[in-house]
Image (cartoon, rainbow, N blue to C red; front, side):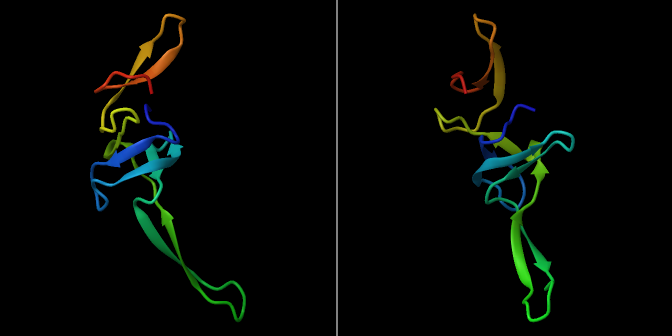
Length: 102
């Protein structure tokens, strides 16, 4: 997967199409990501003790990685991520539009 935790991404599909957010968690086995402030769902929680109130907990749900696209920090455009091997043998990620090292 070419997207990592902490990357800024743009949502391509779904109810939050066009929004941008930061990746909180990457689930490699499920091919899903959790984006901060996007794809929010509400879970109703029952009270655990007597005299306690129930709650509505809002949380970001995981979404498929194919529905998000990396946003380059330099050119601020949604772009594909490529890889390049430098002269010292280090492998780095590069932006598909401006070809800058990410």
